[in-house]
Amino acid sequence: MSNPVRPAVPALDEVTIWSLEQTSPDDLRPSAVPDAGVRIVRSEVPLPEFSRFLYTAVGGDIRWTDRLGMTYAQWQEALDRPGAETWVAYANGTPAGYVELDPQDDGVVEIMYFGLIPAFRGRGIGGHLLSYGTARAWDLAERWPARPATKRVWLHTCSKDGPHARANYLRRGFRLFDTRTEREEPVATPGPWPGSGRELLP
Image (cartoon, rainbow, N blue to C red; front, top):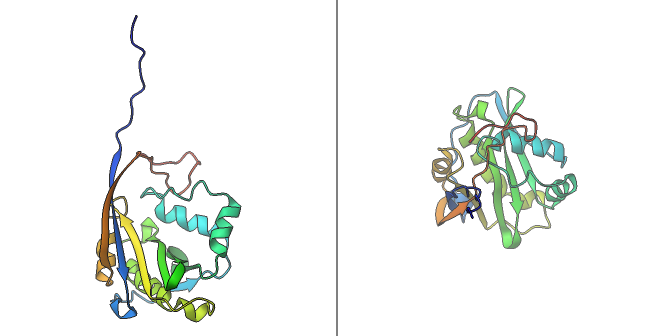
């Protein structure tokens, strides 16, 4: 009797995750401001359609997949949390990237998502956007009086992110406080239009 053929088990990807923090607004080291064609505006209407566009446009080529399965209602709930903010960089009127701030307990704010749409990377916009978004995390309570003053701003990045991401955080004054390694099942790069048939191969 022959042995049944078992499907091959895909090898797990090894992913390094770095967690970084600032514990005082004086930690922030702002970058140079790019040309006058760049401006950063808060998206004050919590709109899942716009948020999902930013998420897929920025993260489609670096395997951001954690929110792709969320329903419209779940996305709306995430955006409606008191203190949650999305700040969008525009280059000559076109969205170039964004920062999403996640308010947490005891005066902690996480930079939940940050990045640029691929066409705008390498133009000096990322450092400015991160500087601006971090400053808004520090003064978040000025716009949300029910929240305590910010005492800590933190984020995490990983080896799946862009090659310059961690260096940008360190240049802005974030300090590394934790490093860990996880093994994950490999996923295809979804691209900016998940499910459209235009997915990119890993």
